Picture 1 (cartoon, helix red, strand yellow):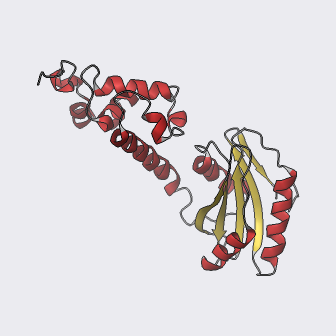
Picture 2 (picture 1 turned 30 degrees about the vertical axis):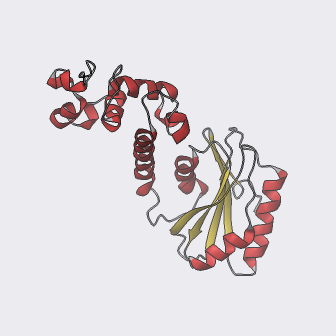
Picture 3 (picture 1 turned 180 degrees about the vertical axis):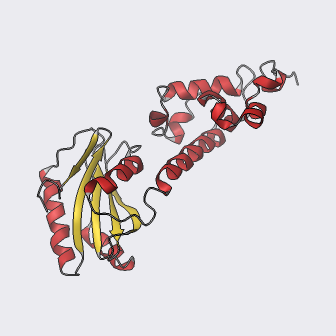
Length: 230
């Protein structure tokens, strides 16, 4: 079989991304070089770096936007099969988890600002609404975070019974409700207010307190507690 003339193996050693990472460190590689390492092999016509640049272009040359792409969307690029798309998605998810791992580790919550930044990172890549809950212990330290419902672009519905059952399983004394608004709007809907009150009243019978309901988007956050709605 004719050797691919675009093979990275034929590049000067200093230009090969894997060798460059070993000699100079990952921080000195461009986004396309790092992606090229993940993609590993190119096609007969294009190198892994060429494919990486096309992947970045699909994500508007923005890693935040790239993180929102699905496996199927990545596979629209000729040369990016399922295995390569899965590798890229897994790497982006690891980066997301690393970003949030230490920020919430047994964090004590006292204000909405304590938790809003974490929630923005956690939910920013969803292009549809999701409803999540933070489960806190008696000292207001976060024990667990879980997405309890996923919906469409314009809304999602959370079941209070699912939330409270999980709160009991996690031995939660307090909970914080949260959901995202992919549209960017931070204004709560009437349905948001009604659901918050419904969960608040149901939780009261179990001696569980709803401390806040936080809506997040890429532009900021809205706190029901800060606005006097709880």
